Length: 122
Image: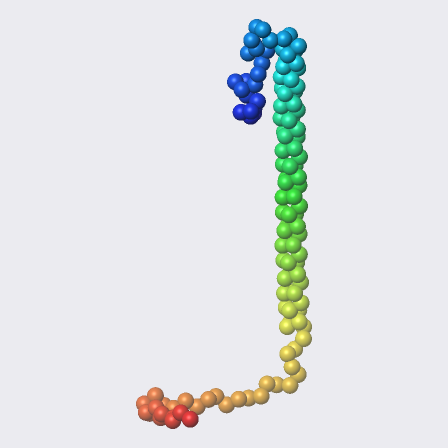
């Protein structure tokens, strides 16, 4: 959590001062250490809150996307069944044509024992 810049080994502290140094410097360093500690704690709490907010927003977004996909799927299935039902009712209730279909003579194929005639290409 502490960066190397503010680690206890690199940070000047009241214990590390020489005996000849001034007591004002000692109090100033102690206040700065306390301020750094409080800022680190505040940063930690803010990052936790920020991460929690992001997690909540991501969860909301995932739920929204999943809901939209579910609605779209249900809509497509509903449209498919309505169209299918209309096609079935159309074929059952209405005749295709009132006139009979024209009779077409079946195609005449040559007997299999006859040789195949080659047709020249143009």
